[in-house]
Each structure stands twice: as structure tokens, then as C-alpha cells.
Length: 256
Image 1: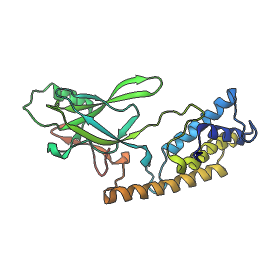
Image 2 (image 1 turned 30 degrees about the vertical axis):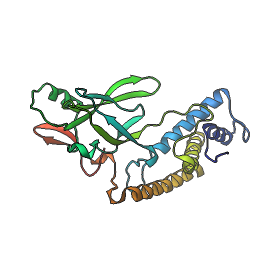
Image 3 (image 1 turned 45 degrees about the horizontal axis):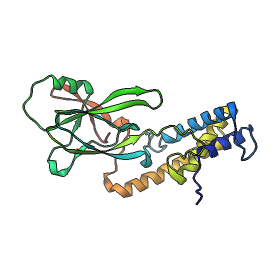
Image 4 (image 1 turned 90 degrees about the horizontal axis):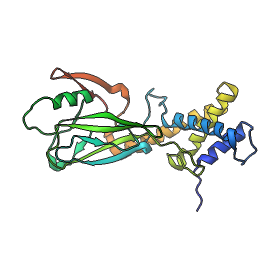
């Protein structure tokens, strides 16, 4: 059964037609294909990280949220995060059965400093996000560091924001599903329009309108799901505060 959701080939073909490189429904090839794909990638990035016009804050799409479940191991304090990890959307929390309090986020350097200090036995209290390695194809991989070292197996759960991998094959679908397809298309055509005419025209206006409407729907549906616990995940809520004379990286008014 066919779907109305747009594939990568649908996007770069529409861009090619708009720019007059090919006729309707004819896919570009060679250097033209490369140029049209690059335009699509720029439009796709614009769509993935939009600014909510009402607040001026970055909007986090609900379809970019994923749940991760991590099982600790005795004596292990470093854990690989998913390859598409971008940032936390809430603080890691334990299963209710553990009785542990919520973890506090601190800087990786503080984890290393804590590990040099001899302390009495205490429950897990801190976590940090540290770059682990870099890959030319997929970028930077991250680890989560815990302090102190777990003394057994515990379940940690958290939602994180993904950075979608680059679509490359003609049949690849983009995130967001069918509802997001038109907004993604108009964002791509807006880039083509600006590149061709060096100004904002009809497609730039349509891209903004469709994206903002989708943001409203996304916020309403997400709010319906989590009720009055909805919080703004904007980076503006992050600050540094002093705890025990050490700088601890925490979130006030939001999560992350």
C-alpha cells in the first residue's frame, strides 16, 4: 500500500523542478543531484531545529524524543549513550524500587575530581555527559559518567533528543511522518528560493507558516500526554550554581 509521506527523492526532485534544472517528475542526476540534495539537507536542518515564534525559544519536536533504558553494572562508571544522542530532555531517574533520589548533573571534570577523593559509601548522586569519540560519518559519540560507581545492577531511564542521521538513499523517509512532509518540503523550497533570488518569497512564507502550525499541534499533543508537567526545554533555563563550593551544572525551570 502506497503512502503520501515524502521520500528524499521526492524532495530533491521538487527542488530541481523549482529551479528549472529538470522537468516535472524528473529526478536530477550528476552535479545537479548533488546541488539539490545539499539544498534539501539545509531545508531539513531548518525544519529540525525551528524557533517557536511565540516564545523565541528552540522547539523540540516530540518525534525527536526517545526513551533510553540503561542497566548499571557493579563497579562500572562509564556508559555509552545511543549513537543518535543529542542531549537529555529530562534527568535520569531510577526505578521506584531503588529508593534513590534524582541524580544531579555536574561537569565531567567534577566526576573525575570526585573519583580522586576518598569518601564513605553513599548512593549514586551525580551524572555527567562527556564526549567519548568522534566518527567522520556520524559525528561525536557520548558517554554518561556516574558517581560514585554503582554497587549493583540498577535501571536508569531517561528521555533524550536525537540528532537524525543524514538521509542519503532515494527511498529514505525523513522524520516527522506524513504530517511533517509538507513543512519539510516548503523548508527545502524556501532554501532554493533564497539561493536563487536572494530574498524571501512565497515558499519562505509557506515554510514559516506550516512549521509554526506544526509546532502548535506538537505542543498541544505533547501537553495532552504529560498534562500540567509540560516544561520548556530551552537552554535559557540552564545555569551554573554553587553547591559545596563546586560548580554544579543544573537546570532551573526546565530539564535537560
